[in-house]
Amino acid sequence: MNTALLSEWTPVCNIGDIPTQGARIVKRAGHDDIAVFRTSDDRIFAIVDCCPHKGGPLSCGLVHGHAVTCPLHSWTINLEDGQAHAPDEGRVHKIAVRVDGERIYLNLSTQG
Image 1: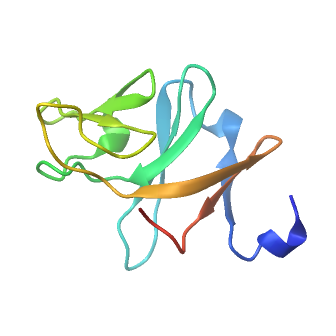
Image 2 (image 1 turned 60 degrees about the vertical axis):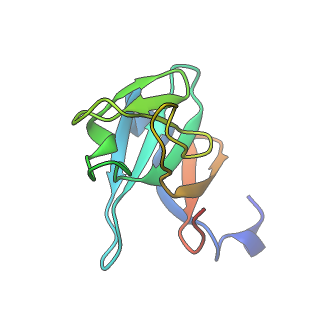
């Protein structure tokens, strides 16, 4: 990774630290936790770990395709854009992700 970009990106873990179709939580003091997901095709996504419906922990949900289903009320959230699947309405903040080799980096200065 270009060293000029390192100031914007925070290393959080390696791909192998997250089980396939699972998540890892990144805690931030004074901010919402972030859920970092690994899909079955080894894509990495990061979103704020809070369902837009009732605040359920998305990191505890079932990962399928490029989506996660909230364990509380079964809302399905698209990991690519943070949008709830219809007929539900809502959105969770997406966190920018970079993968360099096996290392996962998050841009914690931007959300959306």
